[in-house]
Image 1 (cartoon, rainbow, N blue to C red):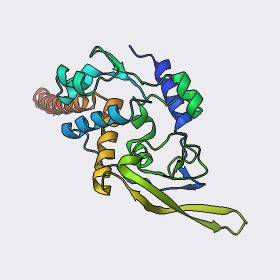
Image 2: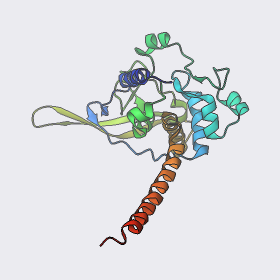
Image 3: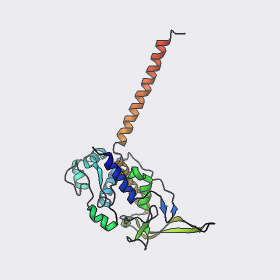
Image 4: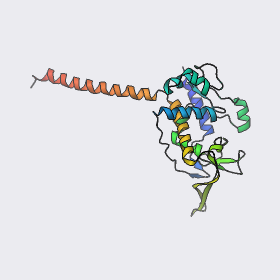
Length: 251
């Protein structure tokens, strides 16, 4: 059983890596809604593929097992082994990062967080905009920065798909002499292997999978909730009729 202490530690580590203020060079930005299809199995399967190919090298998802993913996403054991289990031997194992935490902390300043609960901790819209929000920055050690999380130590692992882009900021001087910086959009510098529409769907599928692993029982819980509500409605009607039958002779 997963202890509350372990979950709290994971959320704390996530907060260190993805600090909560949605700031871009000092100014907040509007988060574009991800509009996920949470019950779209095809999208979740593509998202699982994307996660294993582009995320699992650095990030773990230690609160979800491969066989749970296979059960909910309609994948056989053979499909799990051939397509998702790159650094695991048994389907009951959880998703572990291929990068040693000590090396990651030395290279990036902090170990990349476990992503099991990231979509619940930060919200799907935040993760969606973060993955799309990298821009070229000569001041960053990784060569890129992010409009959602300024100063992030994460490199743009999707640059081959998205291409490189520049971020346009405007600086406004306030009456008190302070300066407010606002984000005004991106400008493409080089094309990636995907066009903008395909890349957007790629990111949506990936975030959809992250939202799924944050709550794998969501669909089952919602189905059970419908039956519970139906039972309560039926019981209410039955109780009301019974009350009328018992008290009908009382004036």
